[in-house]
Image 1 (cartoon, rainbow, N blue to C red):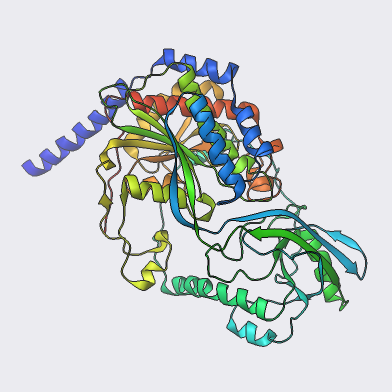
Image 2: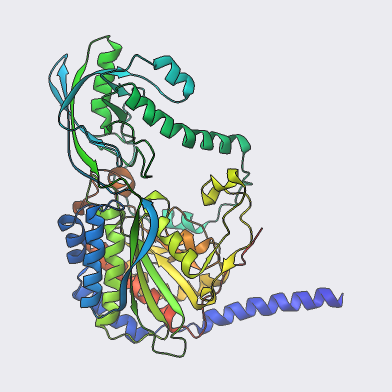
Length: 532
């Protein structure tokens, strides 16, 4: 009974302590007011976004424009008076690749321009080439045997015709009371198991890719065409071929807008001969794996905790067919603007504030993972070849976390990567102790729409690199706008789809969160890290 009473008392004390932290959480309203004034009245966020996207353009990992973005952002950080401005190499990130132009025409049974764009890391055509369109599904070795000797001079359409389905909801949306309330509810997680057959299928696909690429070359295929995963003339296109030096890159591979793709497929269904002309100006920059670069800068701490760090960041790499304005030029512009604001208002933070602009996020969080592993913590590489072949998220036995001496010096990382929509709150990533703190930090921003702290996890971007090793890493809740209907990984990811007032609001909130984290007497609470 005494043991039960002691445990109960400790639990009550813990709850009271948490409530006490919330009640005593201090927000410097004078600094908050200065941040608001600078962000809303003297913003440079759109000027930053304009240069990054309209002038530099899309920033594919290891492309010349990504290198220019690294150079230009370093120059801006230095101009604004930040310290320790530098690029940090991320080794063996793959081959460089660039793309200038692409054109596809139907020559028969009638003349028609077709809208298609190349997949990254696939070869160009070395001038215009012509071939007959044919539908061929190539998903396994059996399919390769079936089509062997039958594909020379063909343009392969590799997906089935997809019937058009009109949109039933608005293409543009903002959170309302109901959708924010829904985000506040926490769906209980279902039991997740690593199905052996699923992992086996994944490994088989990874093995089959290079074999397919070489088969297409050996068979003399002119090019391949895939159907865009979105309708309404939107070409959603990412990577193909191979970034890895020494692997076969296959033949020119393009993604075609769904309505044009279906036009060709209907002609093939009618047994008509469809002839196409394809011209792709794309090239690999060299035949060696090259390092990529994260761009780093700091506002040095000036207080007793100046050796501790608060980080903010966004990925600077993008896909290649738009200008990477919303994915993730918007996030980069906001994070740059946040540190510019703090310098402009004369902030002298207790802890050091460090901003990072990542490379290789679109290829699997490569830049942020490498940075976290070097500076803070990493799980050991598995010795089992089967586990080593899997992405880190799929591995069933991570081992014991190996921490560096700086692991305890970082208090939090804040990320932005869901387009240009305004911030409506923050994902707490199941960190219950941090919720009342963030709620207090949001109060000065309730009047501009930022109100909620949700316990939900959100993933697929760079805060995950921090969160998975036990460092508090957070992504903000944003209005979707048309991010997931027109923009995400498409050729429409351009500046026209960014909303200036939303980016001003987001810049101010990020600046305030980072400043609050830097000024807190103690570091932010961490979740319990469960290790294998």
